[in-house]
Image (cartoon, rainbow, N blue to C red; front, side):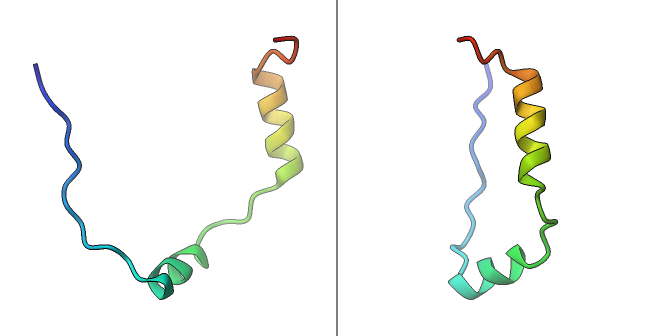
Length: 44
């Protein structure tokens, strides 16, 4: 049996988190919603 444990990391500052966010691609919310609706059964 194996155990998966995350490696310890130093906490990122607010400025570092904001800088990382700037490099993320924009999300098309309508396309995302359409994809989720196509996968999930909305009758549940």
